[in-house]
Amino acid sequence: MEKLIGRVRPELILLILAAAATRLWNLFTPSAVIFDEVYFKEFAGHYLDHHYFFDIHPPLVKLLMAGWSSLLNIPAIDLVTKTTPTVGLRVLPAVAGILIIPVFWALLRRFGASRAFAFLGAFALVVENALIVESRLIVMDSLLILFGLSSIYFYLVARRSATRWYWLWMVLAAVAGGAALSTKWTGATALGLVGLMWLVDLRYHRFRLRRALGSLAILVLVPLSLYTGAFWVHFQLLPLSGEGDAYMTPNFQASLRGSNYSDPSVHMTFLDKFVELNQEMYDRNQTLTATHPYGSRWYTWPLELRPIYYWQGQTQDDGRQGNIYLLGNPAVWWGVLLAGIVGLVYARARRIELRPTTIAALSLLGVAYLVNFLPFAGVPRVMFLYHYFFSFIFSLAFVVLLWNDLSADRDGRHQLETGASRVVYSGVLIIMLLAFLYFAPLTYGTLLSPSGLAERMWLRSWR
Image (cartoon, rainbow, N blue to C red; front, side):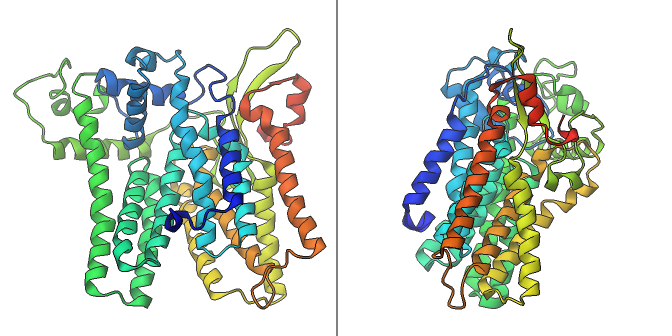
């Protein structure tokens, strides 16, 4: 365990408890189907009633949701009925949302952050309202983020491990990266970053041939096996005709029992089905033309100019109403942007030389930010604020590590011993916490008066 997250510190335990509190509090309220929950609970239900469906994303997390539904004995009919809440399914993404916090803390420590700055960065995620909302609903993003961050972290552990442990951590990095890819194609960026670090290590550390080839095989074959294996289970659980038939060719539909094209003499191999479905997923991603009033352009995400209105409760007799918005904590989102700009300008103006290890970490995080952000400029379909989560988390890590170095003296000792520095540090924590509490009613659907809701709409574009 110590190798996994480093020495367990009291602040890490505190972060985990705080993460559990913010993600699990009143988790099953409201008892309603919220935003994209309607799709993912239905997909899980079809794995249980075995009727074929189509989705533009790979199947792994939907399979996990189906497995969790089965453990909870949730009937398939409740899952596929669009208006029936199945709030027990929210536990799975909530647990993933909790685990993101210690993984991020451990990642910051591996990158060289001090205990104080690792706590600061992880605490920012604990009180990040948008990530909390997404972790409390039956959607995929908290699991996607957990898989992606874990893959990068496991590789960082592997590269510093002795030979007998190296292979275990490499396999874990590949499994986590494969899980991210098998959740959404955007999860491939985690594997890409691991691959980039592997190439750098290969170039500068000159691995032995056995270690280099073995590592490459693991990073390619393990994710590929997990990805294809998820589709194999997908097809095995969906032998009956269903709503997804229309997306597939007549030959594919002929293999589904009960379809208009059903023909027992027609046989499609797994490879045939796999290729056809992935091609259809790609085509649909490219040609999806649906619009949404809370969709947003990629360049607006760093300033969170357009949140998503997820749920509207019934108006009470006194005029109060519950509302859930996917709205990030402004103190965190805008603070990260401001701290990053100020830190870079300050370092340049004062000609501060950062540690080589910090420069390497910042370079990786900069690449991670860009590869998770800029490709959305070329995506034609409607997009939402949650598509920025990966980039946002990498930008937070970038700022934490930058100021971690800028706050150190020439001997590398951190200057949080002075009264002024402690005041600034504590002030940042308090501001983030107060902002979280102020916007918490929009995170948890707590009743607000019309004036209370209007007061929290700081930008016109938030309405």
